Image (cartoon, rainbow, N blue to C red; front, side):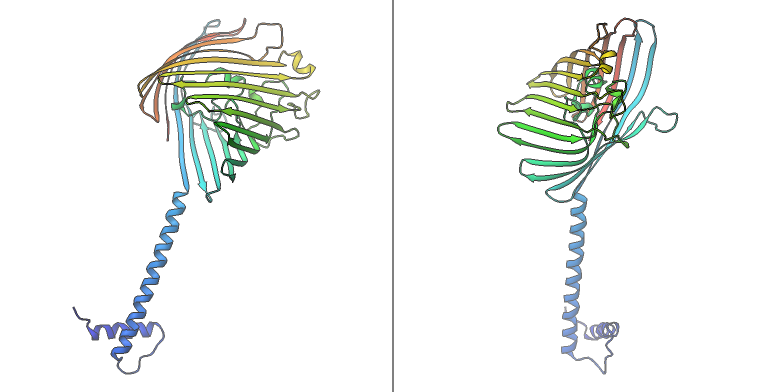
Length: 384
């Protein structure tokens, strides 16, 4: 179909006026053709600019990573000494992950957690920043972190999403001895070498305590006293399919951060094994703290240790059962029996690989004068 020259001429005239050109007399066919070509070139440049902006916006969106996990628990427990009952339903954790790739070699990762559903004055819950660090690739198999990160110790401290482990509650050994979940602020170097080897080395903020209670000694990088830093190193091997072996050590020259009656050096040693072959699974872990000084020895907390073993069996992809024996003592340095033990048996059901329903029963033996809580736990968890 031909071009209506009068219409085109009118458009050209308007365009010339818009461009500040005052047309004198009627435009010739050559002038109309030239202006039409200029308009077409302008439209092409505009289309290219829009496409470039859309591509950049899409690339920026693809660099953002969002995930999270959560778990709801129901506990029905009773103390074997006092008869105290624990009947509780609790949305224990709601966690969101946020990450951003600045480039192929520089990334940001973070994790924000709300514990026990409600936080604030007089509430049981807390809002916590558990990870916020920048990761730099130094080489193909070498990275460095700077910021706030989970320490490379134990089985659950770095990987504790509900679908990844058996049992409603996290095991008491890693909770009370390591103590999971444990994060610090500082810098870390990690990487892989050889056949299945990985290493982690970190310099970071340390614990602070005057009563040598390890779990309450976590400062959570909240205006943390940094008078005395700590160092952590781990060596991990995954050279055989389904097997993980690890050894971690940490040292801090004064766990009181200079506020105690004397300097108290603290050394943590942790080792664990994970084995999965077909439907059979096995986890085992041992952890021990050694605290130097008379003050820690006086209260029996110069030695604190614990261990557990957990066999499991999967019936296909959706159903699994487990049993676990736990033993721990946060005052193992004295002559008084202060150790706890606990047996757990239970079942996990995964209707989807990222969603899990859990049920277990626990029998807990406590030292004389303390309560051991027996009963069952129910839970639902997810990750994405």
